[in-house]
View 1 (tube, rainbow, N blue to C red):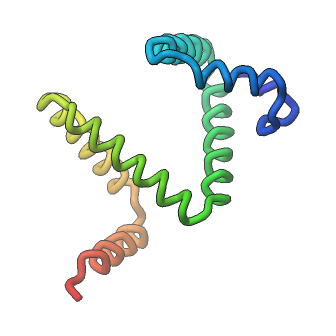
View 2 (view 1 turned 90 degrees about the vertical axis):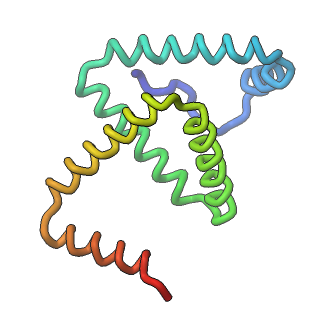
Length: 137
């Protein structure tokens, strides 16, 4: 995906203020259709990327997220973590048993792959952290 053309992404412009005002007043079905159009456009653009472009985009996104997380206050961190917990709980409550089983299988496979690639020092460090976290005080 091409980089954003706006010089200052965080700056408020007349266009951004107008867009903000429109979004405040939009109906829920309008919001849903706007988000669906955005998701479709993003999926189309992502499908047209080469693997190298995809990797570059993901690296940029990861760097931006890391920068944002590093600049957070503890209160902001707590808020986004509680939002993440709520979203995860909602998603899991709506899961069908087959979806739960599939998610658990994927998680187990990912864990097995990660553990197989661990160096002995990493395994020891992980086990020490796990033991400390589960120790009875």
